[in-house]
Amino acid sequence: MADSSTSTGSSPELEGDGVLGTHKVGQEELARFFETVLPHLNERQRRVVSGACSRMLGRGGKSAVASASGMSRNTVIKAEREVDDLLR
Image (cartoon, rainbow, N blue to C red):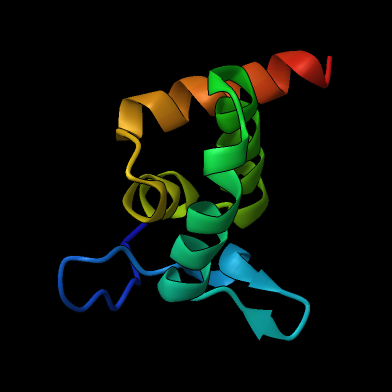
């Protein structure tokens, strides 16, 4: 299946699953969220929040969260796995 993303620039674009209701979550909004929330959390809480956001955003979520939060993509992948483990 071909990738139908229309990414421009170096910022990852959120696709279909990045739409919440009728509101598309933009990269700037996501960055503002992380700038506001992350300083108040410990390391584990940061991973839970970033993993949950990544999971919520769906396709493109890992890259979008990594870019917006300043975390490495590998950390976001680990964070998403931790969230999956919490939900079992």
